[in-house]
Image 1 (cartoon, one colour):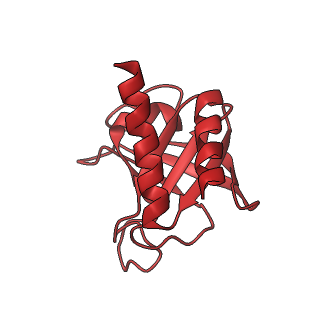
Image 2 (cartoon, rainbow, N blue to C red; image 1 turned 120 degrees about the horizontal axis):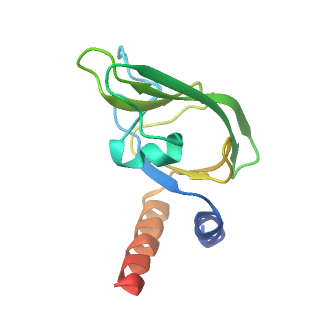
Length: 140
């Protein structure tokens, strides 16, 4: 576990930004929802797109993820749904199953390439959260 957390830290330090998302019921593979993919908080738009997306339009971008476990997700789609009342970001076409409570860390390495981690245990999520808190304390 510590090796995975150390690798996350190294990727974040060498990357162009990252996002952290705990999988909710609507995000999980078992959801019987009209929504698809992982919901991404608007604060993380720069991890998904080079420019902030505009309300009133839908915007999409294709990228690739190399996962820590050696698997790849080629052709994932970052989407901004901005038409009508919507104004949200999602990641679709990931080709992986996620269960409620898992945490996903995506690190943007280049314009179109990402490195991904799935934190499946409470201990992994806690270690990652402590690492992020320590970074904030070191800055302050």
